[in-house]
Image (cartoon, rainbow, N blue to C red; front, side, top):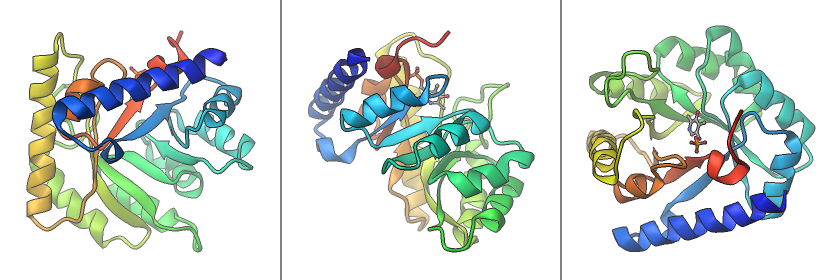
Length: 227
Ligand SMILES: *Cc1c(COP(=O)(O)O)cnc(C)c1O
């Protein structure tokens, strides 16, 4: 478990180095620790080392950790696929959701967000490289979904997220992340008030930061390999 603290320090160095190389301010990149498949105790360890934002893919598993750790001031992000029968759990327990990719899910999340909670912070998941099996709206449909989300009272639109296919090298990772960056800029130019470009994981966070990522989602490099 000491390892988690060391890993977080190493990730901070990687982020810092990537920011320097890209000429960016370190404060412009937020680290999301992806704790999926790891026990609540691993989250406690990461939090003790200063980590605040945690990401979960599997909604039921995430809710169990959120409830077990309700005494800690953590920020929880849902980053996994959302079936309509799971929207209520997301709306009631999470602070952020990065994986909204269709109108029905957005509408249900807004309706089911409990009164008295701040709006759910939302990123639209975009299928930027056209991967056939992957979730995410095609880039051409992102603006329409953004308009809907911006109009829903229970939601606050923050940006976009994408999970491209693993790239063999920095240059190809950068090229695909730059497509997300271009879409993000285009949505901002269309008047959407966005501040979050959720790009990059353990293997490609440098390329993502180079392409303007404001939030990297890192699992294995913090918590270890998943079985
Ligand atoms: C698992 C996951 C991550 C973290 O991936 P690592 O390779 O473990 O860093 C990031 N984003 C999403 C959406 C994931 O499902």
